[in-house]
Image (cartoon, rainbow over all chains, first blue to last red; front, side, top):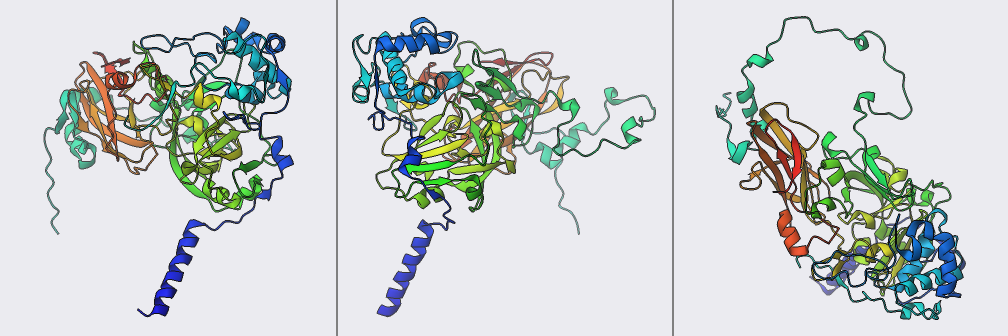
Amino acid sequence: MSTRDTLLAACWALVVAHSAALAESPNLGAAASPEEIASWDISIGPDGAGLPSGSGTPQQGEQVYLAKCLACHGEKGAGKPNDQLVGGKGSLGPGQTPVKTVGSYWPYATTLFDYVRHAMPLNESKSLGDDEVYAVVAYILQLNGVIAENDTIDAQALPKVRMPNRDGFVRFTRGK
Amino acid sequence: MRKKKRPMPSEPEQAAGNGVLDRRLFLTGGAAAIGSAIRPDQLRAAEALPVEPWMKTPGSPFMPYGQPSKYAGKVARIFSSAPGTTGTGASRTPHHLLDGMMTPNGLHFERHHSGIPDINPEAHRLLIHGLVKRPLVFTLDALMRYPMESRIAFIECAGNSALLYQKEPAPLGVQPIHGLLSCAEWTGVRLATLLEDAGVDPRSQWILAEGADASGMSRSVPLAKAMGDALVAIYQNGEPVRPSNGYPMRLLLPGYEGNANVKWLRRIKLTEAPTMTKDETSKYTMLQNDGKSLQFCFAQEAKSVITRPSPGLTMAAPGLYEITGLAWSGYGKIAKVEVSADGGASWALAALQDPVLPMAVTRFRSPWRWDGGPATLQSRATDETGYVQPSRSKLIADRGARAAYHFNGIASWGVAQGGEVRHVYA
């Protein structure tokens, strides 16, 4: 094979490889601006990136809780008729009946903010303001003994909260 | 030309204890050999077969969308909701009353976290953003112009069969115990195509998928799966995805636990790490004996269940029956299914009905001569990776009984003298 043929063959291989990697697409998505994205991008990971401004205390959160959460989650998060939010600490050990709550089981406090802002209260989700979400998160964390009564939860404080079961999770690997 | 003579055994070949027969029995014509003579109970008075009214008058008119026979009303889902809600909970597929491999759309199991949203498809948008070069927003009309692909895939809730973690066997049947499983042909756009349109930032390792329902149900999924066989499904068994299954579009992750197949898909965010949503931390994690929980167990392990005979379907009289059921694996194709009628003491290969597809349910069948006595029916699936469905006791010994999810151990149906079928542990 001549040098020229070798080069041609190499070029052709590149073309084939390129078209295989990038499948043909009609490319019909519209560009999304940061302003458009902001109202939908409400998920919060453990690093807290994207947490809104605002803040709340356990005391403020109690007021939100009594008005919006008590009917489903019981007094002070004791549960019934729906999920128990408080207690169960130390119930995950061998031979015990696990009581999985925010305090006993959830590994990240950011998840509580993310979930309440997405989904709670069930019958009027996305109705709480950011201060109310921070406050009710603070209340549930305080009931679980994770933060103190005088603590304030905001964008800086929330990702720093260390949950009791933070190290309780192992990535699944097949066959192990 | 002379036909090759096929041997016709006078006694069908017993393949395992307590009457399990060779899987080829129905195919080779051996069944005819057993049943060819008229038994005394088959004799009847010689009177004319009736000519029924529907044979003599025109039937009902056309209807825009077909409905099942009014006589098939029992072929329906059962459901339960969380306290104080009407649409938050789960409904279950009546596998004991179905056959074949495809689940009819009206009978596909459901799991909703805040009811079924009433989504106007013209207002629905799919946003792709995060670690991408060009954040994009798609309308349904735009996606409809993309090349489409189909995957025949099961979806199984990770909580399916969780009742078998209980100490005592729940006195229930296939539907309440194993009904959080269904199989459909899903057609849509490869998610990889849309992600390539947006330009994947090499730092991205995960996606967050979020639904447009009132709970904004969301899950993190490895980018590799999103760039692999994931679909944004628009059709379910050929028609638009049902509202209860994600209309106008859902994420389909073949083989993955149901919860990750986000319905009413509105947003994909590319991220470096998992978002650690409520459903991938406080739920869908498996608490083991040592107090640590397994997280991000996505693919459903090989599993099988006998759908007939099963509780509620009392066996009438001794004789030849077909044991049939479903087998599936989130890791590929089903390689074999074995059936036992003596509680696992002996096993026979079941026939696998074509097609046998990866990440789809496979229908298996096994002929069984019931002698009228007690029997314990079990099925055991092996997938193409060589993984063998474990016994219930082995699964619990390895993982503990507090895992709550991903129960894939062998299930047992006890047949009593007289033909009643009950859920048992064996």
